[in-house]
Amino acid sequence: MSLYNIFNVAGSGMSAQSVRLNTTASNIANADSVSSNTEETYRARHPVFAAELQQAIGGQTKGMGVQVKGIVQSDKPLTREHAPDHPLADTDGFIYKSNVNVVEEMANMISASRSYQMNVQVADSAKTMLMQTLRLGK
Image (tube, rainbow, N blue to C red; front, top):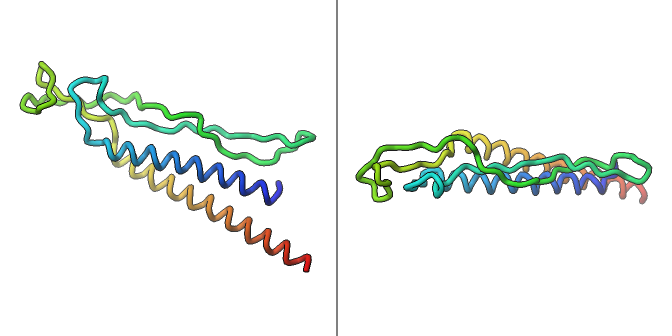
């Protein structure tokens, strides 16, 4: 694998983790949202990743990056709470709360942040090695 290709792989990893951090932040921001029906209630969202294998001429592997395939909503059930005095309560006195688990989201945020940081370190190490290789020619 070329040192130049490492930048593409690390860059795709940073981009994917950025999407993961953004969806996690959105989930945490909407964790306490309430609605009067299940259709309007915020549901947790999660990115879906896939490995992106690029073939070089001659069938050799250049490197594997990551690709964001999409963002899906969680199918965990919503929390239904009886609160007849709440302004958003339905006719039966129920409100519906988001299915976001803040503890899971914080763990997800820490993991995404560390993965992003590791990709930055890989790119920085590749840059350092490339600069040292160029100095050898002097």
